[in-house]
Structures are given as C-alpha cells and as structure tokens.
Image (cartoon, rainbow, N blue to C red; front, side, top):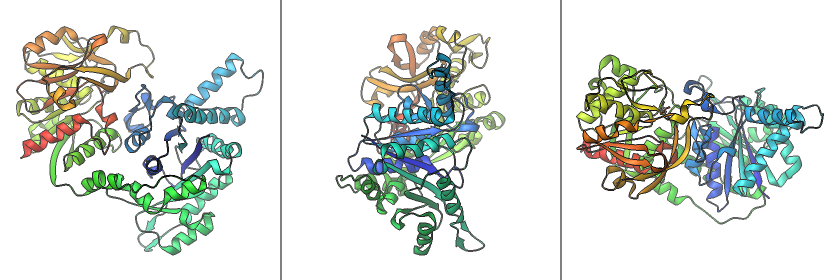
Length: 534
Ligand code: GLN
C-alpha cells in the first residue's frame, strides 16, 4: 500500500510549495523509493489550458497531452516520476464528475453533498494516482493557502485520508512564512502559529513544518515554533532563500528531512548523499566558468512564471555548458517601436518562445530577421517556429504578405494555417494538438547533429501548423525541413542554410529538460551562442 504526504501552504501564496514538494520527492527518490507527485488545484476551471498567462503563468503539458499547472513541471524536473493527466486534479474536474454521475442517477436518489460526495471523489482521484503510478510514496500538493474557502474540500479530504489509511501511512507537511521585520530586527513566528492554528481547526495537525525565511532560524525561534505549533523541534525545517532552486534538496537533506519522513513511515531505505546532484548541478549553477547573454523575445516577459520551463531549460543548458546564461527579456512590442538592432546588438543568441494571438508578432518577426541575417544563433519554439517561417517567406521568398491565418484570416500567403480537423473544433478547452508525438529527423541536418538520433518524441500545444503547400518553394530558397511527423506529413522542425545555428521547432522541448540532463536543443543553442561570443 502507498504512503501519502500532503503538502499545504500557509500565510501567503508564492512561497514555492511546488518546488518544495518536488525537492521532498527528490530526496525520497534518492533513497531508492518509487515516488510520484500530484497537485490539487482549487479553481473551478477544468484545467489551466484556457487561462491567460497573467492569471496562471505557464501551462505545463504532460506526455499524454494534459494541460496542467506549472508545478507539475517542477515535479518532472526534480524527479523521475512519470507525470500524466491524473496528476493534476482541479475543483472543476471533481464537480464535473460528480455532477455527471448525479445526472446519470448513480447516486440512487441521495442528496449530493461536499462531504462525502465531493471529498470521496477527491480521495478516489488521489488513490487512482497511487494505483496507476505504482508509487510507494504519493506526494499530494494542495494548491492555494490554508484559510481559502476554495481549498476546504481538498483539506477535508486530506484529513479523512488519515482516518482511512492510518497514522503511519499519512504525513502532513505545512509550508509557511517566517518573516523578518527589519525595523524590529526580529523574526516573527506569529503568522506561522496562526496558520497552523487554522489547519488544526480543520482537523489537521501538521507533522512537519517548512519555514520560508530570509534569515536563519535561531534555536530559540525553533523552540518557540515547536512549542506553539505542537511539532517536534527537529521537524521544524528551515528553508532560507537560496541562490539556485537546485540547492534546495541539499538544504532539506542537511536537516535530515528524508530521515524524519522515513521514520514516520517506519521505512528503512538505502543511504544517499546527493553528491552527484551537488557536483553536476549545484556547483555548476552557482559558479560557472563562462557567461553568455541571450535575448528572450516574448510577450509576457514581465511575468516570472509565464515561460517557467523555458527559463529553467536555459539554466540547464548553462549548467551543461559551464556557463551562466544571462537572459535579457525583450518585449516584442518594444522591438516594433524601436527596431531589433536597439535590443539585439549585444546578445549572442536570440530565443523566441511560444504564444498566442497577434499582439507583438511583428516584433518577433523582426528579431528573427535580425538573427538570421546577422548569423546570430536562433532558437524558435512553437509560435517562434511559425514566426520564423513567416519571416523566411516574406523576406527570402518575396511572399511579402505571408502570415499565419491565426493573425490574418485572409492573408494572401497562409504559410501557417489550420489543419482540416481543427476547422471543426468548437470548444477551446483541450482541443489543440496536445502531448507527445514522434518526429523523424533528416540525416545531415543540424537537428540530427543536435539529437544524435533519428527518432525523437516531443510535446506539443498548438492549433496551427506549417502549410505544406509552401514547402517546395521555401526549400528551394534555402529553408531546411529537418523534422517531420510522418503519419500526417507535418513539419516539426525548420532550419536555414548557411547559418551557424538557426533552428525552430513546432513543439515544446522545454517540457523535457532537466537540470542534470539539459535538453539537446537548449544545450546546442547555448553552445553555439558561447562560440559566437568567443
Ligand atoms: N498560437 C500558435 C498556435 O496555436 C502557437 C502556439 C504556441 O506557441 N504554443 O498554433
């Protein structure tokens, strides 16, 4: 039978609950345990796929094509657990199921209530993840902050879980903030006391507290938290701000968080010291030999979370190249106003990420033209690839008004357009080309050199595709179509001739990069950027 760890958050949001959960997963996995992680999200949307990046940040796409919360990206980056659609549960999904069952008559005339019907559905979904993953430990992160109305059914389900599964098979970890008040020169434990108090009112006594703080917790502070929150002193874990999130597993390990968890579960596991992680990831992330500056030309650049996996992939590529990657975030609308030269003259690489809608498109196209003509390494992702095709059609093939039908319905040259099957689509949610598809690489291309093999699999999230009618013409003018989804004859990767590194992909490689295993496209991009700099 699986054991369950519930991770809740208190005081404020954005404390890094997702990263903390992933790191706990990491230190347990290093002890030889099979783990998995899941996230319970309190919002009523069925999934975040229809949400604006300003509302939600990045939408993370799983192998099996679910559009999920970005915390699932942390789970996959830190651990080897296979994250699939079941690993993200939302209030919207839970109610959807319960209401469908009610309409079918499955409840035999009963009154449908939050307890037990909604909470049972939540518990069933948690057990389902345990079952399909075959994990020994299931880490369940509960979204939101304790005290929110929305998260109550999830917390209640977590409470009931201990009744069912037993004390030694369930563990509650609470992540909280211990603020430092500058004028008083003091660390304050009261918000944490209140937060734990609120949890206790719901019937959950946390077993472990993780305290986010900018100053170290003194012995006295730990004593106080321990006493007021009713938690063993060694289970009060300090999570002081770190320079790199990849240090966090080491921070937890040092405070024997893994041992504390294992002893609660009565588990004896092999020893691990995370030395490899420290050497390969942390040391390189903190103290690299080189430095390289690249431009990131996007639309939501002021938002830390909008391109989370892409930023992390750049960090991974830096680690693999012993280099710090300085990311200059450029708003593509600023390029439209001030020209590409103004922003790109000092960078060694240009990256255009994915996106939706026409705003800022022309700036992205200008940035790509600049990189292509000046021989600056370029990596385009999804929309970035579509823009690269439009740019090439317009400026190399003299199809002046080339465009995607996403931005201009009546364009004379629809080089990017909808497939027939997408024309029929009515609902916005979950109807894009989603999840992993195989892609065949052409020999003697940059893509083939980068990946070092012929068959790859990458994750997708887009509606529009390269329009095959233009393939011959663009090819004649020097565009290389180096990756294809054979079954539907879809172009997945484009390159241009006579350029040191120009590659753009219809998929999202950022969903498969890991700190100790940088994705080949990002690794190659940073390598080429470093070469240009030298
Ligand atoms: N808007 C484009 C499409 O739907 C690209 C999507 C993306 O970049 N993820 O095809």
